[in-house]
Length: 199
Ligand SMILES: CC(C)(COP(=O)(O)OP(=O)(O)OC[C@H]1O[C@@H](n2cnc3c(N)ncnc32)[C@H](O)[C@@H]1O)[C@@H](O)C(=O)NCCC(=O)NCCS
Ligand SMILES: Nc1ncnc2c1ncn2[C@@H]1O[C@H](COP(=O)(O)OP(=O)(O)OP(=O)(O)O)[C@@H](O)[C@H]1O
Image (cartoon, rainbow, N blue to C red; front, side, top):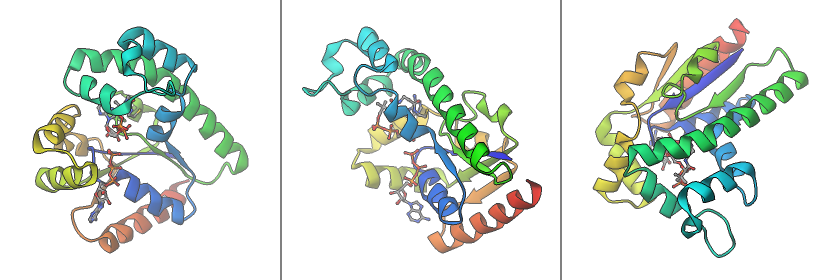
């Protein structure tokens, strides 16, 4: 049983995946992997430097994420170029981690936290899809507060993804994260029980 966890930016995927982890779920996190595969001299790092130039590097040769983010969230074609460099490597490493978890315990459900699960078509490879959602006003407020960004910057990031309302249509399980963390935790517990029943 492999369940894909997704939602819009700042909808609460990390918050929810932490709750699943506390219940004992193995988590494969695409955002964490996307940071690993762009470490200096890794193939994705080289691809990014070739495409975006050395001006997106900091003095220690790591990627300047703020700079790269401001380029790709403002320009769909440059975002597409970055995705083509990074995503195949993320998929490769995610598959490796899934295999490892399966070897450790083939019966335990595994969660894959992937922000772009629907956009990339990866949802088709999941046994179940979980979508975390909040309304757009809450999403905007939480995003601005978490990242200290302006409304314009936050809106740009929200628009770089499929709207949450669209993503909801792909869900086997929905998690409404617009209320309290306790309310969210209860929904997570129910889904974890159900995934274990189905596994
Ligand atoms: C552009 C980058 C350098 C900005 O880094 P930053 O530290 O500011 O943000 P972080 O990586 O924590 O991402 C925050 C959120 O932004 C959204 N996001 C990230 N990349 C993308 C993208 N290519 N398209 C749409 N949304 C994205 C996701 O919801 C993600 O959870 C970084 O996000 C990146 O390398 N993106 C490309 C890889 C990618 O697509 N990652 C998402 C999952 S594989
Ligand atoms: N139920 C909640 N009540 C109040 N604040 C919340 C709740 N859930 C999440 N948050 C806050 O909202 C922000 C976004 O949540 P989180 O980082 O989990 O989202 P995400 O979907 O993982 O984001 P990203 O797409 O950027 O990775 C965080 O600052 C988090 O602490």
